[in-house]
Image 1 (cartoon, rainbow, N blue to C red):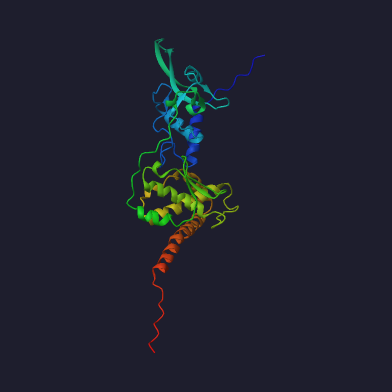
Image 2: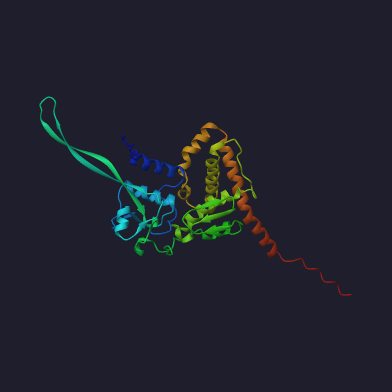
Length: 317
């Protein structure tokens, strides 16, 4: 009985699907407003040769999705040749390349033979150095302070806006998000960003998410948007962060990082003509709520600066 062959992987489809999925998640594999923790630059083969073409985008996307920090990728045998071992259970990733072969074809009329080169896509499996134990030290990135970011001309306004907001903000890692269960905002370190303006723009987006927490505005959408509720919350956060950026005088191009939600948003807006009005209203509510902390602090400062009333001196008898 002939054993069943394992179906071959469609490398092109896998790569395309991953890139689409990352875009749908709001992360363009080729761009983000902060530098990923670890070694930056193109992915490298075990010998230090940089990958090219689609392998660069694909391996970047894989590293982002799985949290790999090393730039180095290699096959199982290449790891063994270096005296190392791929950890048991680790999942390999595709590396693709074009191969070709020559075919001789005959003209059905004249019988003349011509040679034609045919290209086709091939692939092999590679592992990131973070999946491998026992490699020489240079394959693993050292923890280093990122290069200093560009300062902001709007720093005083940025500080005045965010400082009074009582959100717990944790710094570290290479992801920015609001954790609704444990009620904190996670941000990469400030120096990981290209500029303080980029940091402020990203923090504004996550702080709008924070404003919708159950202990604050308790922003929910019920059954109205169903499976699109998450995308709708992203729309509210994006509009809200746009309002914050405009308030702080930040350039508009800094807060388009979630443009990949556009397809979802279009579906929502086409299905419900009042959805954008609802989103803008929720975003405005969040913006006003966040501004309220600075306004309250300014009010307290005014009260403290106002001289106390002085009892009039009793007239001399």
